[in-house]
Amino acid sequence: MNRPKINLPYTITDYLAEAVAIVALIIGPLYLFWHFGTLDSEVPLRYDSAGNVTSTGSPLAMFLLVGVSVFTYALLTIISKYPHVHNYPVEVTPENVEKLYKLSRTMLVWLKAICAALFTYIIYGSVEIAMGNATSMNSSIMYLLVAASLIVPIATVFSMFRYRNNISN
Image 1 (cartoon, rainbow, N blue to C red):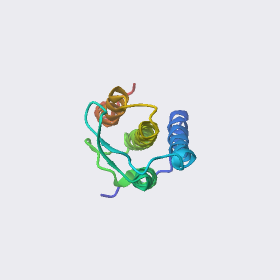
Image 2: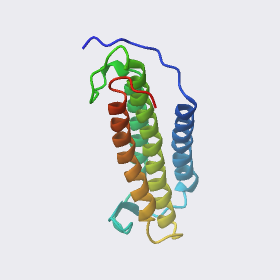
Image 3: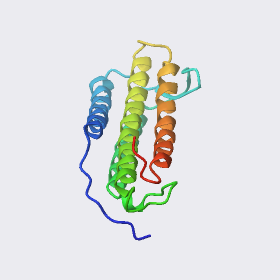
């Protein structure tokens, strides 16, 4: 696999997704820290598909969500910097290499934003339930974020097939 290494500039949408991800990465932990002292000794840790609490535990366990969110962001950031080692559903040629690399990186940048938003929403919902401000999480938001995390890669693969022979549009 001797693919070219190309330094691709970020697009406006890439910067937008990065901003969403960074804001979510900041808001989630800040919200948790802000309310941490008011949380009971038991906070929601698991939910069923309807958003109802199925398991509780120590508030310290919620910091695992922060850690997983930061780790996911960092890992996807590192991976996005090396598009020449990504797997592609089509042959990478000199004609389509730039477009395929951009699509792959953009997909990863948006996945970072979606994952960060998902973890932030879980932190927010857990804190709200623990404080008695809610009884369950809004499962529609969870389903929307999970669906987005599936739709983005699927749409990217379809776009890659469009560019397999360097077809425009």
